[in-house]
Length: 221
Image 1 (cartoon, rainbow, N blue to C red):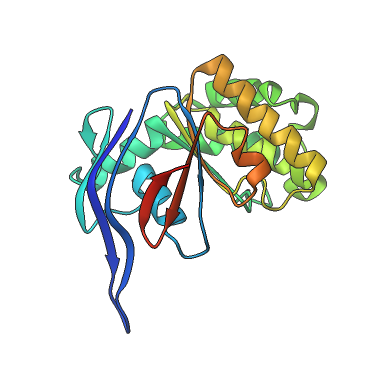
Image 2: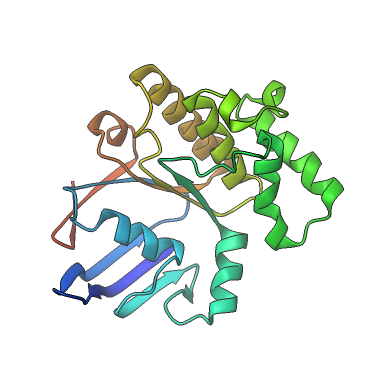
């Protein structure tokens, strides 16, 4: 699925930051991978590389053979829209849209017709146990429910990869376990490749494979 070759990311400003240092990494199709490490160690930067949200300073990021580092801006936008689902710690839901409308927004770049967007959004919400909450605004939902909406939004476009950045970071322990079980179920049932950044060792232990990144260097755990 992914093959990273000698990936380096350097940020320059008042001081130079080496966020990633010559990273070589392979992630197989259908793997569930957890990434841990200290703050500032490069976790989020690595996830941004995998998601095509940023480009490496040097090296290649191959997704199913396509080098995300070399795609045009338009092709990279299409790759993100069609192949990659994103889940973030802070949900990033639009507060004035209902749960179903939030989920449907993921299909706009794919030019899915409105009627089909609505149907698929409702199906996605049902798949995460929120069929009865489709007409609720984010402010009317609990944190765990909002994260389920965010997961449904990521999955509704039927991506090959799900990238999750601290998906349980704002949740209590019981809700955390519910979300992790949901992700595990989707991984097993849908055959998704899931890469998850987490500070929570209890969450990381549930993964099929664990990586650690510190000072821009990736190691297996």
